[in-house]
Structures are given as structure tokens and as C-alpha cells.
Image (cartoon, rainbow, N blue to C red; front, side, top):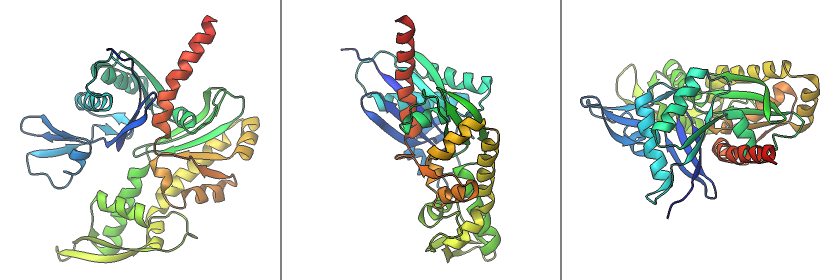
Length: 334
């Protein structure tokens, strides 16, 4: 028996999510590939490869084939996509799937074509692309075809996409090379400068998730952090507070808020009035940082809310975008 399969892919800098029509999000794994540098052979993909980061012997290297939302290593991305698509679909017999992939809102033609080519080489029958904020809006349950303004702030691992959406398209947008990964790097730098403690990005992410905040009025929490003392070279454990993370993350979070403000300044007045009533919707893993919604709301004066399932909104939206394209095609025929 041959099955038709429609697949939506949120191809992010830090993780990949795959949505299959009728099943929902069936796969979520890190965008990491473990390579043998001597033979250029792929040894592990996804979560298995992520666990190797910082722990690999000399001949193994963990590679992220995407940088800030775009492909930096085409060959590895194609192999990674093939692996994930096959893992998501399973071993059953199927026609080559239709695939829809999210791209940053300001991706160039070259970057877009690289994504499409990689998907075709990975086994797709047809490939469509959709801008990440548009997919995020669809996945958040917003009817993008209606004639009123919606504002989406999608904070991924490598890029933040900010967009004003109306009548099925993007009216104003901005794509920043600042996102969740920069929060982690800011914590690493702060720990090094303030405490002479060297930590890895995985530990920084644990701090961000555990006690991280970017709003000064947030509740204060504490967490023990282990790393290497840069003075003695020995392992050391210290206690870190939420207030310290606010200080560490201030520059990055302020940059995102300022760009939200810039997009609002460029928004036509009628759509700006809609947004003042409807509010700002945040999606992506980065929006889960404690206090970020409060910070944006405090700086803009506009009600800011997090989507029901921000981590999967873009993946769901890419899959449902194919249904919208089918509906438009049917209406044209009728």
C-alpha cells in the first residue's frame, strides 16, 4: 500500500521539528551531527549527537550545519534532513512526500534555494517554503487571511523574526541574528567575567531555563552552578541568583525589545490600532525565557502573550500551510 504524506518542517538553528498531517508533531531533535573528522563520516544525528558535545574524542566533532537559521553546510544538512524525514515517516511504503519548510523572514534567494535543494535531495516530491512568522501565526491558531493586523515575535535558537501579518501576508518584518543561543552565550560571558568560572553552553542553558529572567521585578531564585575556576584551573561550585541572570541577559533582551519597537514604528496606523487591541503573540523556544513577555509589554504598552504551545507553533504552521495552499488552488479552479 502506498501512502501520501505531507510534512511540515521547522528547520531551526538549534532543533528540528517535523509535523505530519493527521499526526501532529512527530519528531523534535537537536540540529546536531557528530562527524568523524578523519573520514568525514556521520557517526550520530540529533539527540545522540548532542550528548556528545564537549565529550568527544579528538577524531569526533559535533557539527551544527545551520547558522542563525540558514544552511552553513549543505551536504550535512541534506543528510540530516534525509535521516529525520525517514525517521519521522517510518519504514512504510510511501510516495515521496510534499514538504514545507520554514525560513527566516529576510532569507535571501540563495538561502531559500539552498533549503529547497536540500529537501529535494533528501527525498521530497515537492518543496514549499513559508516565512517563519507566517507559519508561527498559523500554528498559533491565528486566521492569517482576515483583514486585520497581527504581530508575531518568533524567537528561535539562532534568529528572532518579528512580523506584522494581515490578509495572508507579511506587511512589515525584521529578522534578527539574535535569539535563544545568544541568551546562553551571554550567561557564559557573565560567569566568566563576574565569577572567573568557565561553563559550557549546556550549563548556561540549564541556568537560563532554571532561574533565568530578563525582567527586574521577577521573583528571585537561586541555583548551584558547577564549572572550572579560571584562576586555579580546578572544578568549582558557586550559587547564582535570578538577579544576576537579569544583568547577564539585559543587553540581548533589550536588543529584541528595541527591534519590536522599530517594527511597530513602521506599521501602518490601521494595523497598529488592531495590534493595540489584539496584542502581541510570542512563539519559539526563546520566548519561554521568564519575564520576556512582561518586558515587551512594559516597553510597548501592548498586551503581550505567549502562544499556547510556542515550541511547536512554527512546525504545526508549516504543515497547515500546505492545506491553505491547497484551499487557494481549489478556489482558483472553482
